[in-house]
Image (cartoon, rainbow, N blue to C red; front, side, top):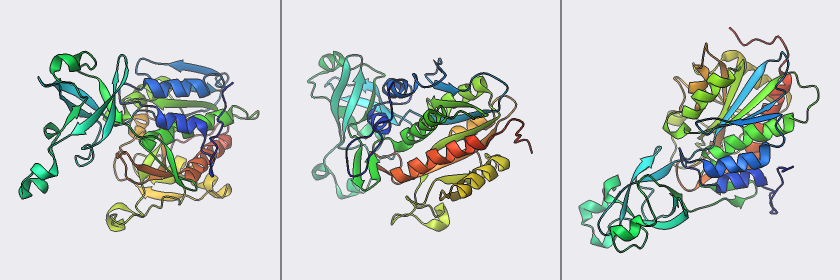
Length: 362
């Protein structure tokens, strides 16, 4: 039975999380992350299934009259999508998910083809060939391309097809202590939290809740996997786990973005997307377990799976737990793995607090 073993390092990073972070899983092409979740979760979950959108749905305590709690963390990541190949064999692309246009240039990427990854470099005109005016401009998408070393379109088309996705060729590393960097903590960290929580809850003998943890797909283009999963699970209560912006770096005005520390504990959202009774329960559990937490005001539907889950069927009592992250949607996302562990402990404690008859109707 696969377990969440650890890599050998000064800080023991969970192997399950490391494999998720290194898995290349663009929106709509989440095969590699699906395989990691299958490996670590399928044999421990009491029931385990897939659906037509690629979600992975693991259940503990499927039988009996129990309150159903659903956890959701998405396994897709932002990426590029090959859209055109010119006569010289250069590849042009569109974006999967939200991209900062200053990021792609000069990167090594892996194009995920039917025959395996193909190395490419994102190219654009060199600074030496620019006018002073050009140097102050942000390159537009059509000003960049992918170079695979092909000499013409026919050669390129032998290895790459229109619609192939591509991700940056970077992987997980520890920076210092429990601080780590990876390409897609957004939201492999959240997926790991919901699935590791389920693995730990599977060992509880007195658990009164049914637990459904979902590795959701296509969050980056509209929370699509979560919408379908929530309709099928129809939970009594749900918590989405995602990342949010740590604002403890030089270029973050706390008056605009709030104050959130990378190592200050999980972030609990408050606002219309959040059921107030679920929020209060999360706070109570965090305080009883002495888990530090931070509070984030969310004045509208959040840009997370919580927005889709809350509105499923007749409505779901929903919470949102986030992991502070620096440099979101870049190849160098930074997270404190100690906070990831705190998030797991909070979800486990929340679930153990659920009793038959509990209601989050208000």
